[in-house]
Image (tube, rainbow, N blue to C red):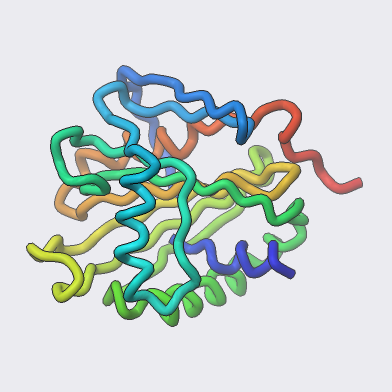
Length: 209
């Protein structure tokens, strides 16, 4: 049940390829690697936790956690757009059968996101989610606006892309965020980051018999 709820909550698609100078980050404890543009920087874990705590304090949702994060601008405030966060889900193996009805799953996730994050965001809109069975990845995308009372100056519309990579223990969820004004410049880069995740052999998803 917990795994099902986590899947339903994941609604935040994707094509094209961008080849940029990049660095591969290896996270042995969580058995995966991710490739990030070499001009980006990893956000220190303590700073990441601080920034998430700020949002959690005014959200109705369960506390948002993230294991790793990266952003483009080293000199900017931490978690300045554009940035990417990675969540390690250890909820137990998620049956692929849960993705049989993506329309229903997407609708449930959208409703849950609006209920939980309405205090932080407005104009939440979600694109069509889909499941890639050959790579065992669920793709999703959406847009939202940060409430001006929460973040100043006005950031305009934020574009969110997500990829949930299934594993034997749950999933690795990767979310990327950028301002709509920068989408044309950044979309290919962000999509490539989401596609770059490689799950370690011992945690690689195996299909149900």
